[in-house]
Image 1 (tube, rainbow, N blue to C red):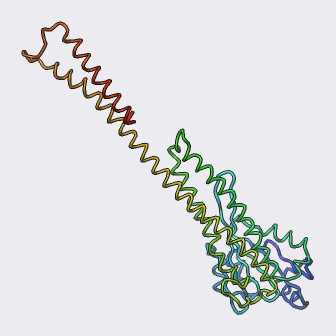
Image 2 (tube, helix red, strand yellow; image 1 turned 60 degrees about the horizontal axis):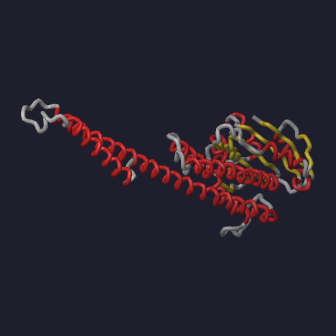
Length: 332
């Protein structure tokens, strides 16, 4: 459905007419005016009218409706299409969730399509409407503000994940427990969160490189003001920082998982040594008692008064000797 629709003149909001065609004609009739339409998870029927009025490319429209797209930038004859994936850190579940924002930019218009609840669009529009000087630069300012707000939030999410990773690290390397039984599950879950985060941040570097004119992209992008390249370059630098943080998180969580599995293996070996040591110590009295439990007539020292204490003493000496041996080798 259409969440918001307005015409902006010199960076100031003016309510647009209900008819989209009339709103676009009015925006194009005056210089530096543009219309901004925001939609949230539109149906094909709801989006069909917008597609016809603004001449959006059918391939981009298909991507906008189906969602589940990688961050990308595509240029068509009459519009520019960009996909951005905002990320939100859920405090209650210590997890990340992603949404999608599709941005269409053309001659005097911006169409934003939002999927999911993770979106900075509301705050972006409010902030821009309070800053007419920035908004007066037209659709380019909207695209930049959306990208900037999304990437800035990436930095916050990366900081939250770093905190979670430090907690996992402390749990794994705790001298007392060395990680609980569900530590491996938590590590795998955290690794999946990092992977989900990476899917949002990693592919965004290429579109921002094109918009900023860096990374081998020297030519400008249609429908985007070339004067905005330094601003997109700043956003691109922030994405680079985020990607480096994500790569560091991924490497560290892999190392922590390897360390946890190694500790688990060591603990299992220690347990097996202890079990083997106690089994060896239990075998001695079992063997002696088993021998003397057999009803043979000619057995040594059967009629000696001190035979019973002597056998018990031999058992005790052997048990103490084995205990000291295993203790010295740290099996017990």
